[in-house]
Every structure is written in C-alpha cells, then in structure tokens.
Image 1 (cartoon, rainbow, N blue to C red):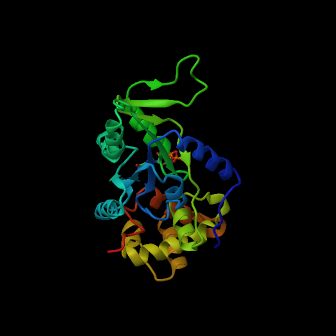
Image 2: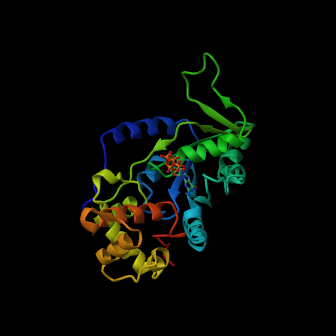
Image 3: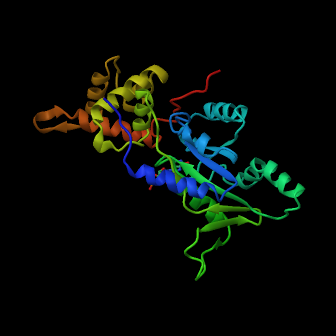
Amino acid sequence: MHFQWYPGHMTKARRMMQENLKLIDLVIELVDARIPLSSRNPDIDELGKNKARLILLNKADLAEESSNDAWVDYFRRQGYSAVKVNSKKGGGIKSIQTVIQEACREKTERDRRRGILNRPVRAMVVGIPNVGKSTFINTLAGKACAKTGNKPGVTKGKQWIRLNKNVELLDTPGILWPKFEDQSVGRKLAFIGSIKDEILQTEELAGELVKVLNAGYPGILEEKYGISGSEDAYVCLQQIAESRHCLVRGNELDTEKAAAILLDDFRDGRLGRITLEKPEA
Ligand code: G4P
C-alpha cells in the first residue's frame, strides 16, 4: 500500500501559520503519544525557531505510561519543554499554565531586563489533523476565563483566549501536514486514523496492524478476540471475523468488516494502551 500526502490547501495553511507565528512567543505543538515522531512535522522546527517550544504528548491515555514518560524525557533532552496530556478527559491540563510559564521563562526574564513588565505570553497550538488541537483548546479554555478580542468592533482581529493575566492563546490552531518519505511513517499515521480511510484499503491496513501488534504486543489479539492467532495476518483477520460473527451472504467470512472492527478498536484504545514508537534508549 502506498501512502500519499497531501492536499494543496496545506500551502494556504502554511502561509497562515507563518503569519500567526509572527504574533506569538510560544509554539505549543501537539503530537500523538502513540507515535510521537511520526505525528510531527519537522518543518515546525524551522518555522518556530526563535520561539519558545512546548511539546504536548496528547492522547496519553491511549499510549503506554512508561513510554509516555520516556518520550517526555526524550523531548526534554532535546531542549523542548514537554508534558503528557489527555485533552479529552482533562488529564495533565491543570498544570499546563505553569508549564507554559516555565517554557517562556527566558522571554519573561528578557522582557523584565528591558523594563517590560506584565506583558502576557502569547501562544499558538499547532499539530497535524486529528491530533486533538480543538479538544485541547476547548478543554483549556473551558477552565479559563473570558475570550478577548471578542467584543463588537474587535471581532475582525485575531481571537485570543485569555488563560490568565500572564498567558493568551490564539483560538485558531495551526494545521501541520504530516510529512514523510518513509512509508512506515505513513502506515503509522493511517493506523491512528490520520489518513482518511476512504483512500486506504481497510483490509490491507488492518493486516499491517496485525503484524505490528503480533510483533510488539504478542498475545493481545488472542486475548481481545478469543482467537487462537496466527503468524499469517490474513488468517488472524479471518479468525476475528469468525469470533465477531462477521459474515456476508453465503456464510462467507467478512474480513473487510473484521478489519474495520480491529482498526476501530485500536484507535479507540479498546485493545489497551499501545505505543507504536519508542524513543531510542
Ligand atoms: P484536531 O482539532 O487536531 O483535528 O483534533 P480534534 O480536537 O478534533 O480531536 C480529534 C479526535 O481525537 C476527537 O475524537 C477527540 O475527541 C479525540 N481526542 C482529542 N484528544 C484526546 C485525548 O487526549 N485522548 C483521547 N482518547 N482522544 C482524544 P473524535 O472521534 O473525532 O470525536 P469524539 O469521539 O470525541 O466525539
């Protein structure tokens, strides 16, 4: 299967991001905790240079806890601020404001030396589609106070969410495009649902996922679906079809349906917490 990226409107998204980046001090980059490297776009390092940087391992609830911690360490060693969060349930969100202040400490110090006091840090959320940008902003804003720039006469400008007297967040996230030459990166993005299923062959993709799970999490499919398992991915899909009573006319096994079930179960965390990329030791 060949994964390709990306629609032309990404050029527009990039331009908008460049414009918005001029307005901010801090880039809050969301990555998917299950594939922290493959869900990044390396261009953000160039686009966001000279800005304070914070990486959030989002959907941490779907990834292994020990791997989440290892990734946080990994990114910190690379000089980023980094924390794990669950934007959907709010886990890790409470500490975000403190983390933002810490990430911008250099800037605040610089301001102070220049006699600039009490200027709020301005931040922008960026990430690839579906990584949880809107969920994160909503969860954070839900805990925050009023939106600014939202009054009559000011609506044309950018909308900022005032988190407290020290931090303002741009309320529209920057969309990054996944970037890869390596097909294994494309595959992982497809596993987590970042590449639309309509353009993918479900069975083939699920077959690939079976192989990855059998290698990294032996026994997980057997336990979840009550199957005997097999080294042959297609046989596994057949067994899942059988155990879930996925049949088409003539009582044939509907492996296409079994494939969709497996992908959904994985994406929604029903197979348990799974990390597909581990940081190098
Ligand atoms: P985007 O703006 O970056 O495109 O992503 P968005 O916030 O729309 O989130 C994409 C999906 O990811 C949503 O699910 C959202 O609920 C889910 N999500 C976001 N953050 C987390 C998280 O930390 N943990 C988990 N488990 N899920 C998260 P959806 O299926 O599109 O909608 P729904 O199921 O929430 O209705």
